[in-house]
Image (cartoon, rainbow, N blue to C red; front, side, top):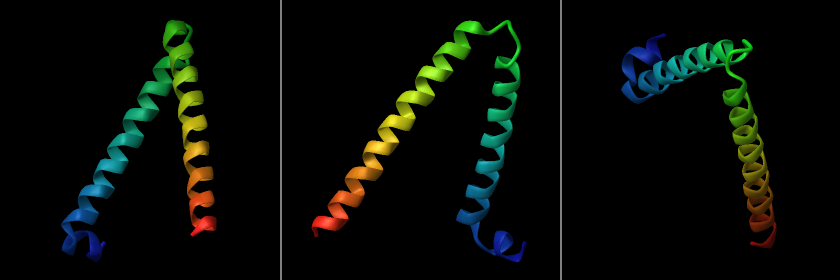
Length: 68
């Protein structure tokens, strides 16, 4: 806790992360009901695209590190 009090960037990142986790929890709780079928579909598509892009970026990073 002392590091949060003495380091403003660390405190900002910590609080922002907690707020993002709370918002993500609320969004997922709302989407889990049957009222948001379209939102569920778009969330699935968005997560799939994000996962594929992240996988490609990680693979390219390892390839770059291997070639240097």
